[in-house]
Length: 368
Ligand SMILES: Cc1ncc(COP(=O)(O)O)c(C=O)c1O
Image (tube, rainbow, N blue to C red; front, side, top):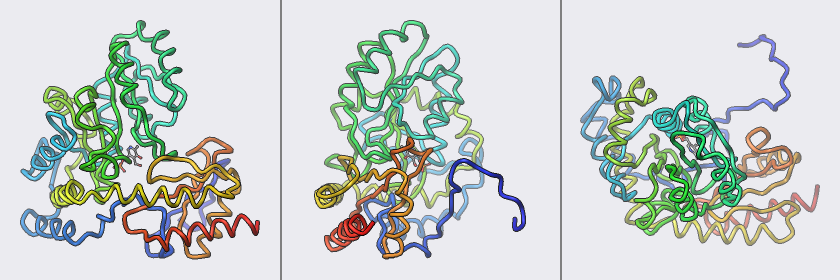
């Protein structure tokens, strides 16, 4: 690639940062519970690889299916209080597959303005009409439903339960009421809530709400420390996806070791309740950061955005020099003026780690 001209671009270039180059103290990871390096999870992956081989060798509809995928799907469905679950190669592939299978031309999708790119891409692929409502604004959504719902065949409300860049929590009960009033489906992405919220780490949607949410989606790539996406839904919906979801049908199944590791991680999540500790640590850090911070300190979860605007890149670089990894989230991932540090607090951060970060950030503000 050397010597090739780089096309001029109005957006900053993205860079790849190998794990080895990252500072020792990281607030960048989605491994919220420390399971990516848990010996029990690693052992499960090793055992499965030894027994079943590394690759799955094909799509699940051809040579790629394994019992361990079904075992994991059963455990995920039970965890999410739904009848069935279906595994995809990633959360991205899953959102593409679910949205483009169930909705199409003549249908309408009401999506929170800050929904993840994988949902936006799935909606575009579906061909359905996209109507966006202001972030977490159920009053705005209600007005849009009243105005537009009748003009379309099928409709769905799409959102996240804990937003990836804002760390705020959704009123899923309020959405259920709207879904019932306007006869729509409801699809909620629990990617960032899984493992952290709920008495068994099951996320924000517990036993009371789960039957009322048609499609609960998630990823094993964050708190579960591995990879793979899943949808928890009815048996009928699962069957429709097997017949129609192109990102499932035309893609190699995950290595069986990934599913075995997912099962091991899920067992730890359910029994050890690490999420409560993570949330308590996050509140501690949020309290320490809020005092004297020139930008807004947001979120009500383990994700703490510190909104600094255009200077965020410089602050992130200086923290990096001080040995702390706090990723800068820039436009277009967030709107202009909303550029932020996105801090994720994890199970393995000590109080000293949190104090060190707070001190470095405050010192940076005082000096610059
Ligand atoms: C809300 C949300 N949904 C889906 C995904 C995609 O999940 P995966 O990383 O498993 O593809 C992400 C990951 O960035 C996410 O934040």
